[in-house]
Image (cartoon, rainbow, N blue to C red; front, side):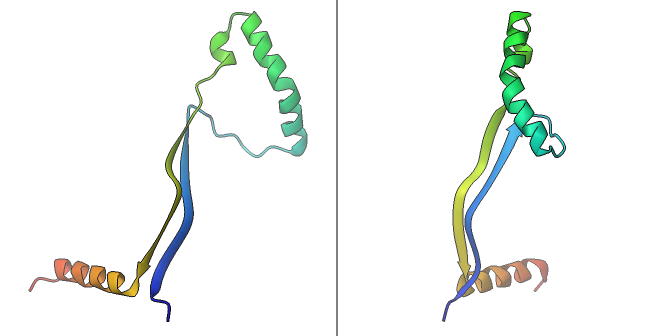
Length: 89
């Protein structure tokens, strides 16, 4: 018998700092941005707008490929401890 109550596999969470959340793009928009983007950045550099060419975008991984599981025994002990904390004796 499998005593696993909760199993989580390959859980990841990332935060993107300095990046505006955009709406959904069509395939055409994505392809156009892929071709036009480098020329836009080069143009910004030539005009002296280096800040616009290299926007600060950073990805921070809070969790990366984390796996864990809780067994029946640990889950039961944890639940009993929580009930004891909430119910005065």
